[in-house]
Image (tube, rainbow, N blue to C red; front, side, top):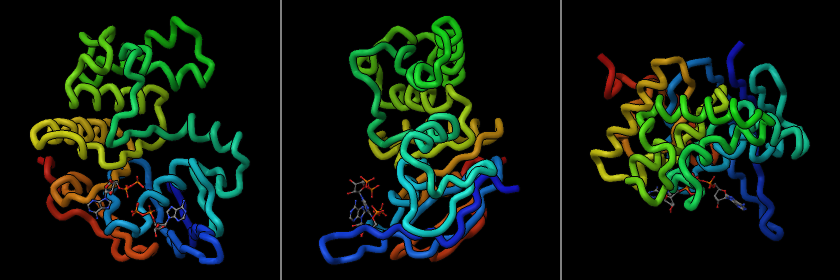
Length: 233
Ligand code: ADP
Ligand code: ADP
């Protein structure tokens, strides 16, 4: 069974008496340990699709099966529970708590999961070590560089061992060299077995993935294997 099974997904926004078909019949599967770049022009439906895959919203029509569970028609509370268990989010703007140290930032998803303090510290510390920030745990985000902040955000996304890592323009606020370093970290996470979906406008970023799905006008325009992944050797 695929990790994600999406069939005929449709998202219609009502704008007054106008309908906007943000997604207009999208179908695809994602297997465990795939690394996929989602591309497409502004307004093509990328954010809408990430919101649905990330269980932040439900479709107007169609089905979304995640880990053998139909999540297309869940109520908000159930959806939040699935989201916290299954999804790790990484954003362009990091979205860290600025006045809270790194360890506590990374622990947040574990608090929602009801894990006890000592275990939370241990897991958050281990995850920060994994992203190369073992020596920065008691620093606050504003004492770190952009690349280090994104590593903290990646640690927060990973700490619950989610089924999928969803990254929206994760290098969008970083200089080229730092962006490359973040892409090397994604490569390492992919090789360790993580499933990654990444939204990007940049071909050089998409070239790190193993598959590219291009959206246009709410539909899949192409779904292709990446020929020469940037960091594969
Ligand atoms: P959001 O996630 O906030 O709905 P998007 O993910 O669509 O927005 O875009 C993130 C940022 O990238 C926004 O600031 C948007 O203006 C910009 N952007 C969106 N589409 C394009 C594009 N095709 N080319 C360049 N920048 C874009
Ligand atoms: P992208 O991320 O590729 O820029 P979006 O998923 O943000 O695309 O948007 C797809 C289409 O849906 C666009 O026409 C956009 O204007 C519309 N849209 C997105 N979110 C909303 C919303 N909350 N209400 C109304 N229309 C929306």
